[in-house]
Length: 212
Image (cartoon, rainbow, N blue to C red; front, side):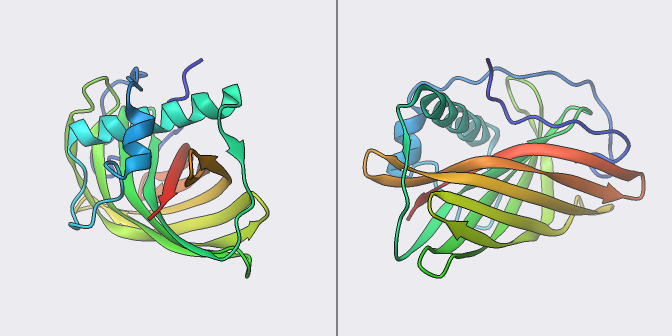
């Protein structure tokens, strides 16, 4: 089974002004991705720019590897206390052949049961093995939600644009916190809708972040 971030869409699409191309399901090479994620080499960008195609491939591989270890029982859930700043990525793809990957930065108050944050610096990529970069999507999504025990539930919403066509994005995020060899990890799903002048479509994807 492949754990690739996936989406089903109809009229609207992530390419915003250019909904085209054929859909394919890329394979993901997860070798070394987990250690890269834990060490911070795939931590969210602080430069204000989107990822290169190579870095986006590493992010997808990290997500896939994390999910494989979760499903095998190699990663166990944890119920943290206190507060933590966490950074990582959120990604979705559409059936027009476009993937969007953006930085995810969150402040989690485990004692207060709240999470806030931002998803930004989105890049658009072909949904192929090479993940050829199509361009950037400006704007950001605000993240607000709750945490309870080992679970997180949040909403990410806002407007993204490729420079000519804005799209309203609303995602529900549901994840679990894990102890990854001493590093706090949260990983889960992201699903919702994208709405632009072409209509509204369902989105489905995923996210992960580690403690800074």
